[in-house]
Image (cartoon, rainbow, N blue to C red; front, side):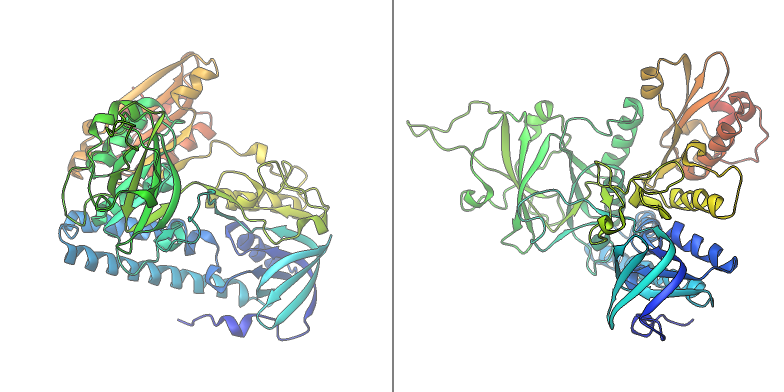
Length: 541
């Protein structure tokens, strides 16, 4: 297999000024699919990608596929007992990282050559910015390349959102998902800031590898957009893996720890023991002392309990910062609005969402406007506020999924191929999602909370996964299935599946919803046996 050589393709071998039919900024799913289609139609295409490590886009390099490779390796380590000792944990993690890198490198190379080997496509490695409505300059290693294009497509994706916390960008050991997936050594302790689905996938994965994981959530509710019973089941699953949660927790500062790890100053609202000092004023000798915060669990709605131990693989070391003594020399025990703790850990994952990647594009030079949330403003045809410029994928503020970027390609191509009735974003139906926890969670459509808020007349269907024969055969009986069905019409409004293979089964439900098939269609469908999919017979009975 040939290997891409970035220096060899940083600039075209001809003139540093190029005129082309189409310029695609970003090598992501929507952009690369569009490039291949335009090339097949005889159009000249330039694809600009800022980094040779990102040929093919986020999904294959730092997103979906490498993370799933690691998740599968972690599950295997748990099943084999390779997460039970420090030596076996390190070996399993090292092998997993090696395999992840192999997969990403192979896919990156294939994606590069799939475009660059076509006569009509020129791939330029460099960071692009607009210089006018139809002109872009690409800064390459060998110098700038000017490109003029009749049509331009922005496909730059999204980047991790970094909260404004002192020390978060300068302290070694603090990572986004990209960095955490490329460590050479497995962290024995990991703190995750944020309990969204990205953070939870990493929590589940590292717990399976044997890392002690603590998740910090800034408010009191776990997965607030999900139904309470589903959220409780997901939380119970993660806690069974050993993941600890600390709610109402705001990280105030991050700094290097004396032991070479990372120290977080965390304020927890509603704690019954108060503090007014910062981490750097923690009394000497208490930095490695574990604090049992069980007594504050009710006030803080947290399941985190750290018992005294010296085991280095325990969860993030938590030392309580005492209040200053009162005038008579006795400590103050008045309950404050919040308590301050120091958490010491080996690594921190910042999982606080992703934001559209528009920095440095100089969109104003082309007349391209942004939304209030910082995404490229588009209409239902994904046209920007500038003529003949479109935006595909995460950068336009839509759902951040690779398959949505692919569907964005369909929206754009339906206009370019002369269709009388172009496909639009409004035509898109029932976007499913899957979160790859130890027991995957998948959903599509409305949940009960949303159906109730919409004033719909519905019935709730529930089925414990333990009642599914295939789940018992797989020795994976944990979880639940839930569906929302409109009472009078039998229309499926939504489904939530916390079960093995839910990421496959949810697509069956989506198809039925897209076709306006009533719940009775899946209830009476003949499925192969034994499968998880056949549980839809019973769920919708």
